[in-house]
Length: 169
Length: 286
Image: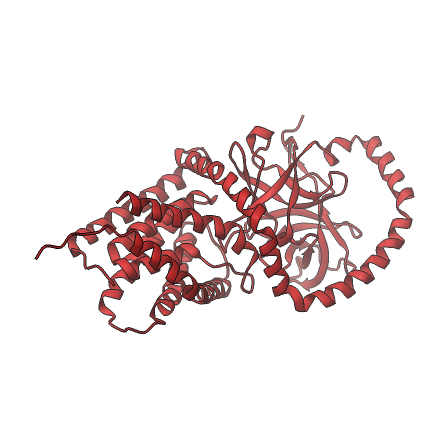
């Protein structure tokens, strides 16, 4: 359990560091990827809705506390995103290798739109609709492009740190 | 691949996490910058600063390389434009000594020296904001170095500063700066030749937008826009006068006859910021 917690903490801190340094300079048409969304969705795919929601909450809260804005919006978004993707994954039986890429793309788009709506309702964002949709779309594309590179690494970390169970027949 | 979990306990977990998120949103929204959650945010900012500084030091060349690749097609045009600009600047520089003397005499005469060149804290940019909707940077100096909320941040030098933004969050060892291109940023600006004033607002990645310009104003192409100092009830504006914001790129007639809009190209490449100065201005009037 401790190994698992340390691994997840390491992944979250690394994500925040990379997003605020390297990926702030490597943008796609002015937009940077949302690494925490990728982590949440991949974990939800691999481990199910419970862990997807829990890690989404922890990662979102960590990201919120580094931003000068009302805290909790990213945590709320990623909790629901992790739960929804994990739930959906239980009903998708496709063995397609591009399934994680598609889920990350669609999930990120929906997540960013949800984040924008909550921020708008709290009076934090007042961007034109076209700008918001453009950012959500480009972020989703960028995250989907990164998924084939990131997915094997995350799978190795998550599966390697999974608590070992003894099964008795 | 997917571990089946007991649905009821999972649903309960999600309800608890969502409730906590909503409570945190509400609490932080009500208490603002003075609440305990904002304090925790400052601690998180301070804890991340050394890590961000280390990662930036190692990865900046890599980021610059990829950033250069992305911008490669536009570099040739940029080079040509800069050569023309360089020739123009050489002729301007030739006239500089006389102008500088005049300005210095006037500044001394009017007692403006202090407001134009306050003391400053040099800082290194150690990270950029995490969000696609906010344009911020993190610098490696905080309250321990005298950095305070709302202080203007410039680049260049204290003698010829270019405005890049203002401090919006401070921890002991780092601070977060909202850039003037952020959509929540608004700066009182003045056109340097026509002397018309307006409000310069951030538009994200694109040029800035200057509104409230009097219609019919003769505005020259590439006219420089600088900050406009003001004082209301003894309270000075956030920015000292004379900080360069950018150059006029386009004049857009307003929908009504009440105002015109001007787009302003920022004077600095915000993606390439490395060193900045925090001006230690005093807002309270005497």
